[in-house]
Image (spheres, rainbow, N blue to C red):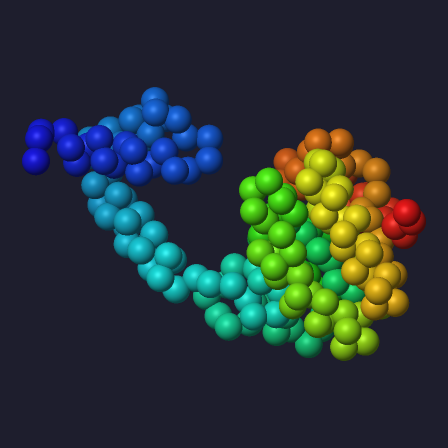
Length: 200
């Protein structure tokens, strides 16, 4: 093994994180190796444990270390309303930024035929089953205002209509081309409270 292979390997591994380019990955690597080796070992152990133990909630598909996430397991949540979001970060944003008390369904992405992402990859058969049970009265579409998010919302609205469920779309405040992850709490709360029925 050539000298520096381990360092280069760590730099390369850190580049898998969003927003981390070669220089940032190099700075992180030097920081850990020069001053914080114990912190680096804790980070490595936490990563291994999370990769091994965190999976998807069997009900809503968010990330959890349990079979069912805390929201789906709570008897206090309103199961007649399902808020459909693109990823687990969106659940956290809505939970911390609004007073929403319903449940969720996490797509883990958007419809994107060019990338091979269709209804099956987003778990939409599972969502259709929940709608078919008859307990859901409202499907809140909280996908981003991107082209893919809008196409996904349209598909979901059609699915809701087939099951006689009202589909609503989060309202103004979320910028066109924006993701929920970057919207402030006040704007998000306003958008969620001002949602409207989807009419095509």
